[in-house]
Each structure stands twice: as structure tokens, then as C-alpha cells.
Image (tube, rainbow, N blue to C red; front, side, top):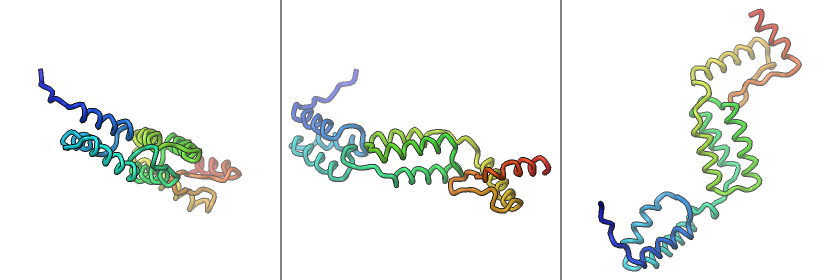
Length: 170
């Protein structure tokens, strides 16, 4: 049985103030709680930390999310996986719509962690092979098939039958 150090009522009240004013987890939370516990005037230190954290945008309600955050996530996934999985692309699109409607930083981070935590659907070698195939198809067919910035192959609908015939012949 481990002995717990006694925590004064003032320290508990100051830590409760920090937890109430800046809810959730944030970088440095444990350090802030230790700083309050060691302070000579814990309530004053808690108020200083709350003011500092709110002005720095660490609170989910204070900092805003915009489309650039979603684009950064998209670039991260493309660089990490070599392309986007169609499921990830759909989830990113829905995330962009939610951001446009208004979304808190905490909700955005939860959704972004869920998307970036998904394992890649294809290995980098498979993605490279598909890109090389698309490039060779472009060389044969001109501008009928092309690769977009996200790694998806696009084809003109009117040329679909022609592509199928070329694949069967080749």
C-alpha cells in the first residue's frame, strides 16, 4: 500500500479550477498540475496558467479549425502512404465539410487521429506500380487517362471502352 502525499484544500481547489477552465488533455497538463502543487500560492498560479493556456490557444474552444488543417492532414497521409486510400479520401472529404460547418479543435483532433491511425490499404510498392501503369497508359492513350495530385487515376468516360479493349489486347 503506497502512501499518498497529503494535498491541501487550496491545491485541490486550484487544480479543479485549471481542470474546469481548460478541460481535456493538452500538452503540459501534468507539468501545470505539478506547478500548482509546488506553488506557494496555488490559486494564483492556477489563474496564471489558465490565462496563459487560453491566450496560447491550447483550449479546444478558443482555437479555430480551418481547411488548411485538413489539407495538412491530407499531405501527411499522401507522403506517408504514397497515396490516399479511397476510404481515407471519403473520410477527409466529410471532415472538410464538418470543418466548414464549424468544428471544435478537440473534435477535429479526434477525427484526424482516427483517419491517420488507419493502416494504409496498399503498400508503397503497389502504389508505385499503379502510378507506373498509369503513366504508361497516358503515354499510349495521350490525355485519356491521368493521375491527379492525390494519386488517383482518372479516365474520360467516353474512352472507357477503348481502355478496356487496349488492356485486353495488351
